Image 1 (cartoon, rainbow, N blue to C red):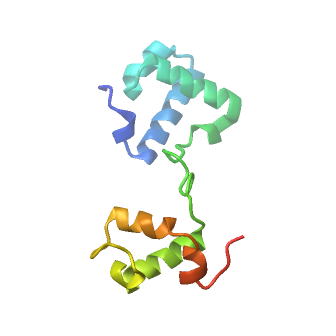
Image 2: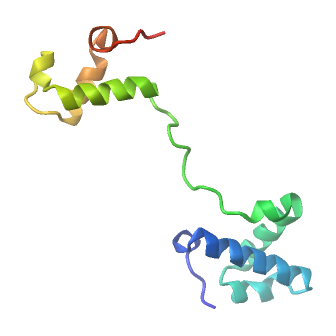
Length: 126
């Protein structure tokens, strides 16, 4: 089996490959023998086996990639919802902003405007 980029393999298929690698390891195969069978490097097989030894079968499951959703956000969810509502309901010139259409800069200006939350939204900032 040829080595494929694991980022392009479906999570279910990758999980099956990991289980297969561990099964072969338990049967006495070496990592360098397992690698071509499952289509990854011997180092990757070693990482899977190490994870399995430390965490069992649950450690072989594919986790979500990337940073968690919502990490590093500047606005709270209810503030985002109110901002989204404001943008869809009004034009920038109605809010006395120097823009005719909504652009990234117009939205940034709206968010930065002092007391945006107090004047535009129906909630108080803590």
